[in-house]
Image 1 (tube, helix red, strand yellow):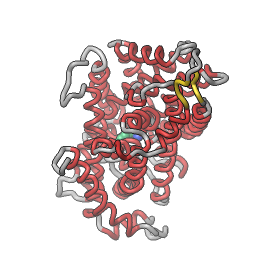
Image 2 (spheres, rainbow, N blue to C red; image 1 turned 90 degrees about the vertical axis):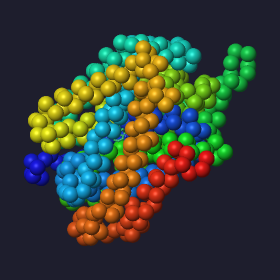
Image 3 (cartoon, helix red, strand yellow; image 1 turned 60 degrees about the vertical axis):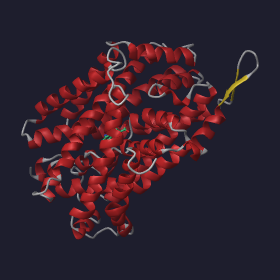
Image 4 (tube, helix red, strand yellow; image 1 turned 60 degrees about the horizontal axis):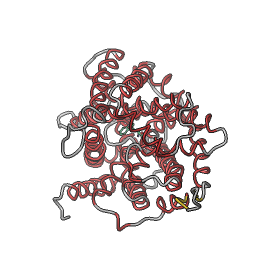
Amino acid sequence: MKSTTRDNFSSKFGVIAAAAGSAVGLGNIWKFPYEAGQNGGGAFLVLYFFFIITIGLPIMISEFVIGRKTNANAVRAFKKITPDKPWYLTGIMGVAASFMILSFYGVVAGWTLEYVYLAITNAFKGQDPAALSEGFNNFISDPVRPLVWQVLFMVLTAIVVIGGIKNGIEKLTKILMPVLLLIIIVMGVRSVTLGANINAAGEVVGHSFDGLKFLFKPDFSKVDIDVVLDALGQAFFSLSLGMGTIITYGSYIRKNNNLNKTAVEVAFLDTLIAVLAGVAIFPAVFYFNVAPTEGPGLVFTVLPGIFQKMIGGYIWTLAFFILLTVAALTSSISLLEVGVAYFAEELKINRVKATIVVTAIITVLGIACSLSNNILKDVKLFGRNIFDNMEFLSSNVMLPLGGMLIAIFAGWYINKTDLYNELSNGNVLKLRFFKMFYFIIRFIAPVAIAIVFLYSVGLLGE
Ligand code: TRP
C-alpha cells in the first residue's frame, strides 16, 4: 500500500493525543490499582517505574520507528524490512494478542457503561462499601446484563474505527483527556483528605494516610517473581506495547515528528495518570477499610464511595464514569485498529467489512470472558478462569515476549544507520541518548525480559 493512500495524523498534538489516548485507559484506572493492590503497593510501583523507564520507553521508541519507517501495518512492517525471514510472525502474534486483550477489555468497558447508567439513576446514593461491593458482585454474576453493555461497547468501538483515524481518534481524545486528568486530581485530593474514619462507637476503622503509605512506601519483602512479572506485564499493557499498536500508530505519523519526544511525553502522561489513579483509590481503600487485594472489582467498589463524600457527588460520579468509558474507547479503538489494518491491507478486505468481521470475532471471545464470571465460572485452565487466562496470557506473556522480539528486531535487524536516520528525522534532530538506547534494545531489554520469564516458569531458581 502506498503511503499516500494511508491516513495521517494532522498535527503534532494529534499524534500525542492519539498515542496517549491508546495508552491511557482502563489499564491506568482499573488494572493498575488492582495489580498494585494485589502485589503489595509501593514495591510494585517501584518495579513498574523501573520497567517503564528502562524497557518500556526504548521499546515504545522502537515501535514508533518500525511503524513510521515502513509506513505499514504491524505484520507488513516486519515483512518490508526482512522479507525472507519469519519476523512477520511477531506481527501475527501481536494481532492475536490484540484480539485477546480487547476481548476482556470490552467486558470491563461494559462494566463502566453499567456504572454510567447507575450514576445517572443515582443508584450509589447512601451505599456503604459493603453494599457497593455486593452490588458489583451481583452485577457481574448476572449472565446477561454485562453482555448487553459489552456488546454495546464493542459496537461503539467499531463505529469510531470505521470513522477513520483523523475524525475518530483525534477529536475525541483532544477534548476529553484533559478533563479526565482534572477529575482524577480532584478525586485524589478528596481521597487523601478523608482522614480518619471513626465509627459510631468512636473507634478508628481506617485512615486515608495509610493508603499513601501503602502506595509509596515500598516493602520489598513482599516481592517475589510473580510480582516482578506482573509489574513488567503492567508496564507493557499500560503503554500499549509489545503487539503492534504503536507500530500501527507510528505508520500514521508524519516524517517531521520527533518520535523520541513523543514517546517520552506519552510514557510520562500515562504513568502520571496511573499514579494519580492510585492516589485517588488507595487512601479511600484504607479509609473504608476495604481489602486492597480485592482484585478486578476494586475500583468499582471504592470509587463510588469517594464520590459520596464529595459536594456535587452526583455530577462527579457521572462525569467520571463517562470519561472513563471514553478513555476505554480511545484505547479499544487502538486495539481494534491493529486487527483491522491487518485484515484490510493484507487480506484485502475493505475497511468497513474488516472492522465488522474483526469486531464480531473479538466480541464472541469477550462473551466467553464475561460468562466466566458467572455460568462458566468453573471452566478453568492453569487454575484460572477464561477471563483471567486471557488477561494473564496476553499481558504477562505475549506482550513481554512481543516486546522482546521487537527490541531484538530493531536492535539487530534494522541497519544501525537506518535506525539513526529514522529516529533523527534524517539527521535533523540531535540524538543525545542514541548509544544508550541502542545498547538497551540490543542487550538489556531482551535479556531482562528473558530472565523474568525464565524465573517465572521456574527455570532459573526459585
Ligand atoms: N494501554 C491501554 C490501557 O492502559 C490498553 C491498550 C490499548 C493496550 N492498546 C494496547 C494494551 C496494546 C496492550 C497493547 O488501557
